[in-house]
Structure formats: structure tokens, C-alpha cells
Length: 116
Image 1 (cartoon, rainbow, N blue to C red):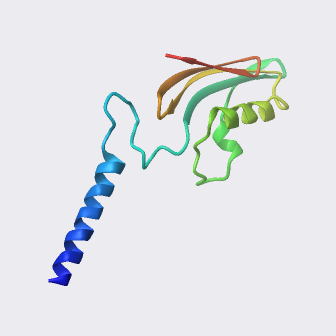
Image 2 (image 1 turned 60 degrees about the vertical axis):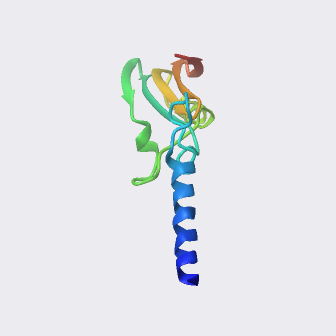
Image 3 (image 1 turned 120 degrees about the vertical axis):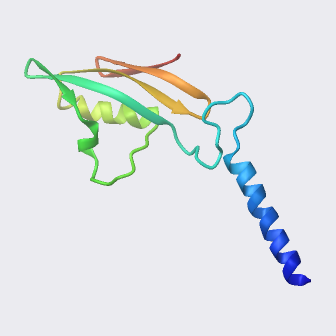
């Protein structure tokens, strides 16, 4: 009898975790609470070095296999660092977070975030 109660309690606990962690909240995009830790930034950058425009691979700045999720503030820090190597940095992209999706524009090494 005690074992049946323990199994029932465990099943109810797991079910509650699944419902709370994996079910979307009504009217919200990307609203799985178990997975929302940070904003996800997808951006395409190019820079001018020695008068020539070239694509910038920001993944090359991080160790191989490193988990690559960053906020807009961290992206600005990366852009500031790249500003020491490039004369001009420009790009476009998006930020995905629990509240939805925002558009990102980088002009002259300065990031501006706006709504879609």
C-alpha cells in the first residue's frame, strides 16, 4: 500500500513538472519557463578593416564547443571589443526572448534594439 502511494505521488510530481515546464502560456511566444534563461541573439555583422569590408565571424572569438547564448548587453561588449580591430562595424539581426522577438541594428559599432 505504501509503495502504491509513493509511485502515485512520484507520477503526480513528474506530471506537474511537465505541465509547468513544457506547456506554453496562452498568447506568448517562446514561453517555456524551463528553457528561458537568456536572450538568444542572431546577428550578421560586417566590418571595415584597411578600407575593405569583410564578414565578421563572432563565433571565432569563443572557444570551440562553448555554449553560445548572449544578451544584448553581452553583444554590445563583443561589438565594443571588435571595434578595436575594425574601423566600422555594421549588421542586422534579431533577439529572441520570453517576450517575443526584437529587431537589432548595428551602425557604426552602436547597437539599437527595436520591436518587430
